[in-house]
Amino acid sequence: CVKTGELQIDKKVFNPDTREFVDNLGLSANIHRFAPGEEIVFKFVLKNVGDKTFERVTVGDSLPDFVELVSGSSSTFEIRDLTPAESEEREIRVRVVGADRFPDARTVCVVNAVEAVSADERDRDTSQVCLEEKVLGAVTVLPKAGFENWMIFPFSVLSVLIGISLLRFSKKLEEGR
Image (cartoon, rainbow, N blue to C red; front, side, top):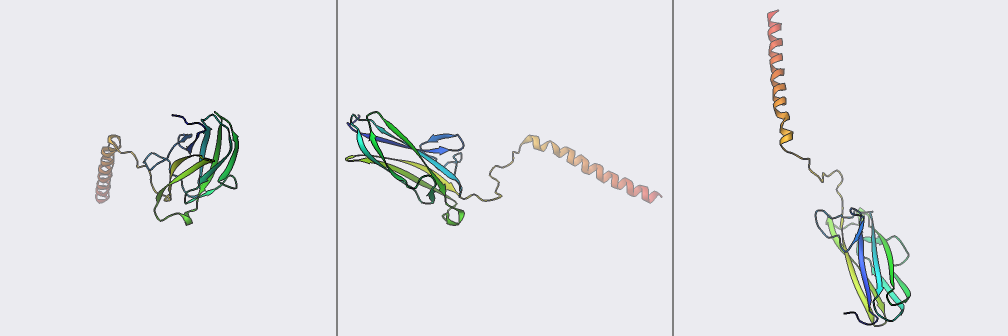
């Protein structure tokens, strides 16, 4: 059901792995986690799905802990004269704080919220991202092991046996002199 003069706002975050904007990048093994100093791009789309023009819409993007605004001087701004069926799209860039200001936990998930307000109309949406302090030198992917790696075993044993035989043979030659 669409109300007269209704605002709708949709918040998304850019996933660097898939190169797409998605609703959330939650805590999962295959989801991108942002490291200290890495930039995050959030996008929102504000739509007027009603039948009246909104003269002034105030949009406030509340930044979560552990990120700092990169683009723009403020995360709050106004959109003027949003006509029926019109939409406005904006991006906000933030950077994960440095490792010296990172929380004690290695991984923390934060929620970025945006709210659009015009007179008595309002809408709000969120997007989640996870931040992770990377451990330098840590192996994140284990080497593959399987049958093909055991095929070298017989050749290793054979090499050791040949080496021992050559040592014994050379000792017998020296004793025979």
